[in-house]
Length: 210
Image (cartoon, rainbow, N blue to C red):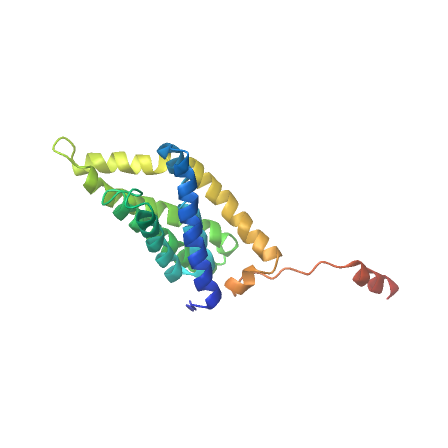
């Protein structure tokens, strides 16, 4: 796997990190924390960054995004340390694992057609697991053991974000397909399948005359 930090990839990473912070602010503007958790607006850009820009820039995007949100809100979102630290680990895992596992799945003829989707699923599971393992430490108390907190946190990480999971699995492949059709995806991914150019009316006339 060749790692290239091109200008396009770096700029895209910065843009996606900014989009993630803005999207989270928009959801929180409605004043409903549960709504933001349900759709997980920060997750989407980081997962997309991992696929388009590779595991290392994806990891950077995952680390920077919650930090930017934390600083831009004066430490209000996500709260430190119980919210910020688990989220940094979760998003960093998303960005890194999507980029890495897409490359791994591409190498297998049985999975290469679905490499991006499989990478997304793997990253979502891995990120939520690590978030739960770390977040459970902050949920412990005299009345709550680590494993009880872990079970609660792990269940919540999947059930409270189900809408975001569905949207990510639907919209990210759709975006990748649109970028492929537009010839943009190949600028990011050298292994992206090429699309045949549409035949214009002029080309059709030439063909018919032949």
